[in-house]
Structure formats: structure tokens, C-alpha cells
Amino acid sequence: MATEKQEEGVPVEVRKLSIHAEHAEEIAEAVAVEHTLSFWEAVKLYPKAIGWSMYFSMGVIMLSFDPQLLGNLYAMPTFQRDFGYLFEDSYIISAAWQTGLSMGNPIGQVVGALAAGYPMEWYGRKKTFNVCVVLVAGLVFIQFFARSLRVLLAGELLGGLVLGAFVVIAPSYASEVTPLAMRSVSTSYVNLCFVTGQLLGNGVTAATKDLTSHWAYSIPFALQWFWILLIVPGMYFAPESPWWLARQGRFDEAEVSLRRLSSRGVNVKAVLAQLIETDRLETQMEAGSTYTDVFRAVNWRRTEIAIGVYATQVLCGIYLINYGTYFFSLAGLNTEQAYNMGIGFMAVGWVSTIFSWVLMQRFGRRVLYNTGLTILTIIMFLVGILDVVPTKGAVWTQSTLLLVWNFTFDWSVGPVAYAIFCEVSATRVRSKTIAVATAIQAVVGIIMTVAIPYLINPDQAALRGKLGFFFGGLSLPCLVWCWFRVPEMKGRTYEELDIMFERGVKTREFKTYVI
Image (cartoon, rainbow, N blue to C red; front, side, top):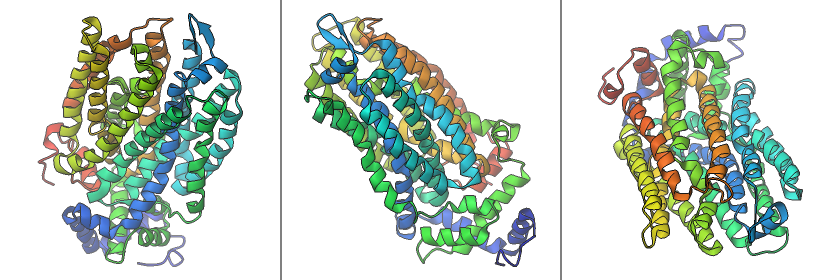
């Protein structure tokens, strides 16, 4: 392959065509290897890609830790006393302030996700990630020193704007550095990071809830710096995405990046030729690379699927889990039981996400997503029925059902959504498709953030378990849409998916379609 210096002045697209003509055999070899490579073979060949993919996903742990922390603080006596008001015999945080504080994360995902799409294309995944990490390190100071709701609100809003970028960077990078056999695991690992952040948020607040000073909530805020300390040492050494480098015409650097991400057993030149060929095909299809292109006819079906599977996570009830500890305390469990149940929720979710990796390798995406969503819908209606027809031990039965709900979510709708929206998007607009899907999911999340405090607070609607009817009702149309629109993409290279979407292959024909 000619060096970039030799080809200086030659248009990038001309160079891509030259590579296509000169390296057809290598492209065919790379595609064949992708299809025959098993998961464990991929692990042996790409251990460094796994490590760096996990490294970039650490930002998602910070993103999920923050809202989970807030949901638990609303049930913490010290936080209620210092930031709330007296209602009947105890202190509570008003529904209006709960809404305002909890708004920082979803608003941040809307603005931060959309804004991240630009620097990710201009400067790359690595530089964007590094800048966001430095900004978060500074903004945590506001939360740590906050002693009023107004200051805390400012910290949540500003922090949310930066944290929102991580949910775009992590899956984009993971999908671009790992091979086909590992794609479902590397992308759905983002969900494991979400659950890890939530689990840590529950565990930390459970450990500090009995403190009577400001350290009860200051310690949890301070622990966000722990992840910064883990990330900083690798900021300089992290390899850039080879897909991004190739799109910039920096083929030599892309080759170096591929070598850093793989072992000696990988034919790096063949892999590079394949990704350049995929990019060339998308250019030929006029897939584009701007936010406008995400909504063009050539990409719209793919964008719709990405938005739909991600928004369904919120519509089927995951935001209720963020309020899990508070929900349990209102349902009748004491503070200790509520916090323990919250930790149990996240621990079950963590194990379930790992279980999903086995299921996705075996059953794919479509079956797992639709089966899981069906079970989630049924469980939500059962929770609602138990609240309307109270029986002995109804609170514990509802709690157990929600535990099963969370377990099901984290082997289906939770992790599978990340695999789907990374696979379904064209590589040239992947970061922007993920950003748009994240932003729209966050808008739905904002609606839930406004609604849930008013629906569950004792001084408002006090619906408690009746929320099961609300989320069960929202899940039904999502289930119908998923059945007709979400295709099976297991075992397909990005180039094959480009061809299948361009040909308009029907949803239920994806699994058996022969190119």
C-alpha cells in the first residue's frame, strides 16, 4: 500500500478506489475471516481491542452513577433534612425540586450527545473523550461543595452536559475497534457499565445513609473522582478509532491503530482494506456524514430502528428503577430494606447483562429483544394489578416482580439495544445516529423525569404500584413496532448490512437473506 506522503495531493476517494481495485483478494479474505471467527478466537486475536473498548466505556459508569445517586439521596434522611422540608412527620424533597435535579442527566444527554457528534468527527473519538474527562473532573467540585438545591442543580445540569457525550463515544468506539464475533459483547458492555454505575450508586448511598453530617451525601459525590483517576493514566496511550482515521484519508495511521488493537495473527492490511471498502460503498450510496444525512431516505429506516429500540428502554419502565429505593420506601419498606432491595436490583442486573452475552451469541438480537419486551410488559401489568387488589405480602410480591423485571430487562432490552443501534447505523454516520437516538431517548427520559416524582410522591398522586399500568400500557405499542421493524443482524458485516438496507430487505427476511 502506498504511503500517504507518496499519495499527497491525491483525493481520498480516488485513493479508496485504488485500494478497492488493488486489494480485492485481501477484502475477500477479511470478510471470510469475519464470518468464520468464533468468539473465543476473536478474544485471542483482539485482547487489546477489548481492553481499550472497556477503557472508553468507563465514562458511562460516571454517567449512570450520577442519576442513580440522586434517586437514592431522595430517600436518605440526612439529605432530606438538609435539602428538603417537613411534611407530616418527616422531611421530603418536593416533587418540583426532584424534577429539576433529576433533569440534569437527561438534558445533558440531549445537548451533550448531539454536541459530541461534531468534535468526534472533527478531532476523533480519543481527543473528544479526553476533553470530556477533564471537564467532568472540574464540574464534580460543584456537586461536592453544594449546600443548597440551587447550587446542586447547577452542578447537575453542567455535569450532565458533559456526561451525555460518553454514551455516544463508548458504543461508537467499541463497534469500530472489535471484530464481528465480539461486536454484540463489546457494544452491550456499555449496558453493563450503566448497571455498574447504578449498583455503585446504590451501594455507596447504602453505606453512608446513616451518617448525620453532610458527608452522608458528599462522599458519594466525591467518589466520581475515582473514575477520573482510573482514566487519566491511559489518556495519552489510547489508540484512535481506525475507522475514523480511514475516513480522514489517514490510512497509514489507521494501519498503525489496527496493529495496536490486534495481535500478530491478524492480517491488518486485509482488515484495513475491508473497512476502506465499506466506507467507499457508503460514499457511493451517498450515505453522507452530517446530521441531515441521518434523516435522509437512504438512512432513515436505520435511524428509525436505532431511535425505536433505544427509546423503548425508557417507555417500558427503566426510569422507575432509577427511583427504586425511593419507590420501595414509599411502598412500605423501611429505609434499610429499601436500600438493600435497591442494591439487590442492580446486582441482579449486573449478572443478567453478562448472561445476555451468551444469549446474543446463541439467539441473536431480534428474538431476544422481542421476547424480553413481552415479559417486561406482562410483569408491569401484574405489579399494577397487585396494587389494585391488595393481598397479604403484596409489597414484597411487587418488589420480587420488579426484581424479575430488572433481571429480564438486563438480558434483553437493555444490552441488546446497544448492539442493535451500533450495528444498524451506517459507519459514516454512526456517531451521529447514536447521538440522535440518545437525544430522543433523553427527551422521552425528560418527560419521565418530570412525571414520575408527581406520580409517586406522597404529597402528589401517590400511585405507587399502579405505575405498572402506566408503563405496561406504554410497552404494548413498542412491542408491536419492534415485531414489524427490528431485523436480525447477527453475523452480518457492516458492508453486508449496507447492501441489505439499500436493497430494502424485509424485516423478517434479514436472518435468512443471501447476498
